[in-house]
Amino acid sequence: KVHIYSSGSVQAQKLLFRHSCFGDLTSYFATHFDITTGGNKKQSTSYKTIAAHLGVAPSEIVFCSDSEAELRAAKEAGIGYTIMTVRPGNAPITTAAAPGKEEFPKIFSLLQLCGA
Image (tube, rainbow, N blue to C red):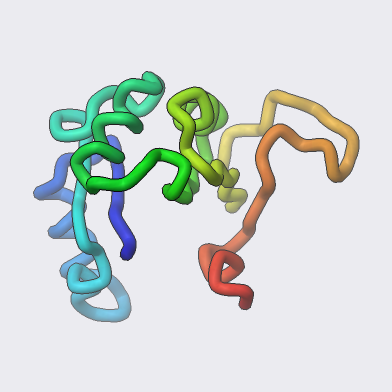
């Protein structure tokens, strides 16, 4: 299942995905969370709250974000897979590491999660 957790309100999320370039995508999301339903995205307790709401262990969740602070909070909460999404316009990644030693694995398309 795919769930979305955004700083934008649940209402705004649904509006955005209802009117995408590819039509109404809302049926692809099982649940929408925002800062009022999930909490502050930079606090680990928010990810625990979401896991509890979903009825799954945090270790079973894959969380993708372009924010290092959000990924660190998710990792601290025990989220099983924290993945950095890299796309044009992202803030520069602040933690420099040798190739293959990055703090978070990186993807350039969500299709990579499907093996594409």
